[in-house]
Image 1 (cartoon, one colour):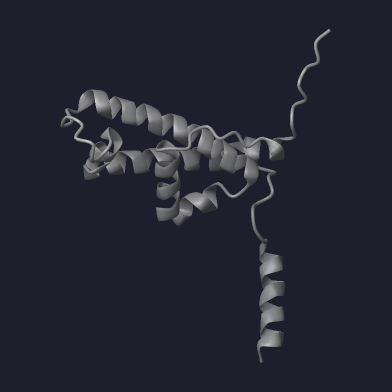
Image 2 (cartoon, one colour):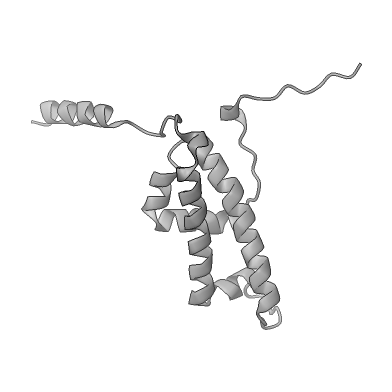
Length: 135
């Protein structure tokens, strides 16, 4: 009988779905919009967000490629860069990333997840500590 592989705990399961260029685009959109990071503030939410954002951005970029005529490749920029030069396309991608974050935040599956980073009580203890020792 063959051994079956052991399934890792959810915290250990970080599959690098897409590294370039879609992963970079999603990361950039997340950095540009602080609300996205607030909406996906737990490890499981981050994983779900990245998974679905990568898929949906990839599909959107594919649709834009089919629907838009691009200049022939000259070795300077990729077709994705050419598409994202158009503010209308960039906004469509941004809206898609934001929509995924909002859907993940609203999903009751993640209601009990612990957030990444300190909670309000921890922040207040740190502020008190800093006040006490900064004088």
